[in-house]
Image 1: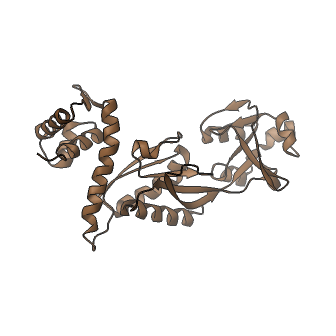
Image 2: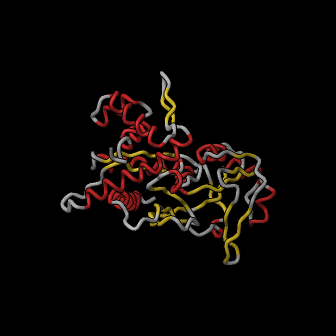
Image 3: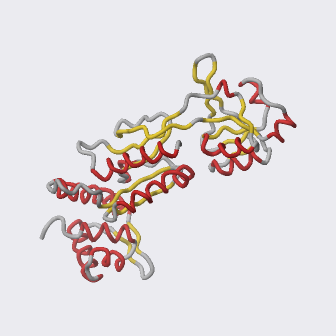
Length: 293
């Protein structure tokens, strides 16, 4: 009996949340998949899955084991592909994460186009505003913004984005426009996921933490509140570009706008970057450059 026995079956069931769907994916019978996982659990002396008549759920041990199994399977598949020099097409499972709004607008369309090119590649794209632990949760690639601090990760700059302070003409007609940073405190402010606002003053970067009248962790909702005249907001340019062009919002304190921040593709720091990760990063870089984002 190989120590690999059951790992492919367990990973497929965990990803599909179904024994029957996993069996179809692997080209096996449901009973064969169930049998291999039972043997694996016996060898490990650990329950990996909770099975009910309606669903399959991972135990705490199963969640930890799954992240490691994914890496093992990917490294095995990459090793096998490496000895076939004429075929470097991305294949296997690529797990990605990105914030919701940027992911919906820019990353998902690019990923979908990439997936059409490589039918042997499976993609799990997790759109979530939480900062995921890439190493601990088994992600291959993440899209992140601004300053990077995790030394376990490698990064490539894909594009950049600007942070813009703005408000609606209706709000400004009632309250006036701030003439400098000190006047922001006297205004109604609208905050998103980040409660700190960044600016440049006297050649250095400064941050403000306004006491917001209104807060929501959705940039789209912050945009709507600003358009409706509820206050000042600072949002990335891709949120407000159309509203500025149509006159629904007015840009403020442009001379004190902070430096553009990077949009980064980050991935764990292996000795050998898998072809699927390298190809996706190249694709995203080209796609976002063409889009002008």
